[in-house]
Length: 153
Image 1: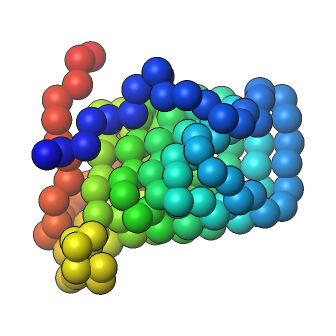
Image 2 (image 1 turned 30 degrees about the vertical axis):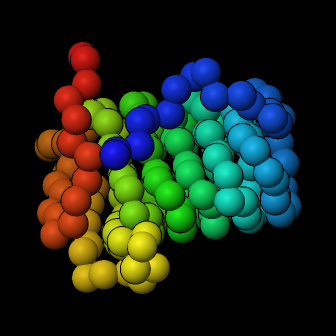
Image 3 (image 1 turned 135 degrees about the horizontal axis):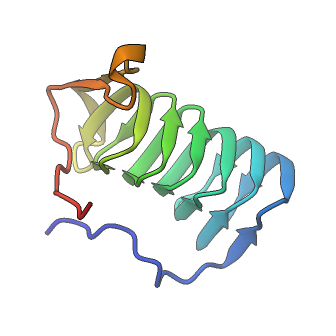
């Protein structure tokens, strides 16, 4: 059965609030939400939520990632990555499950794999930044599977 997208009802164990700045290495259990600025490295088998005001510049080794803000860095998620509008991701993603909402900016490559196999396959998704004349519209070519559910405008 497909995993449901992140919902606001998830219990947040730790919060880096709006206006807060942190540089360093973060490891955690449970769910962490970042609404401030974080620079460094993040490691967890659980859920990281980057809120709409959040700005993360880090390489991530994570269980699940939900992006509503900005992430710059490479992402390796063992369960899933969700990017919701107005989220922005600049970096490469490796995950078995990817959800990209309408209105998102994704600049990088995505490799998807079967979690039961435990290895990256040759399924690659490449997203190119939009040209200045097509502002807000990028090109995505895919040989893998992404969640393309329609969202309400």
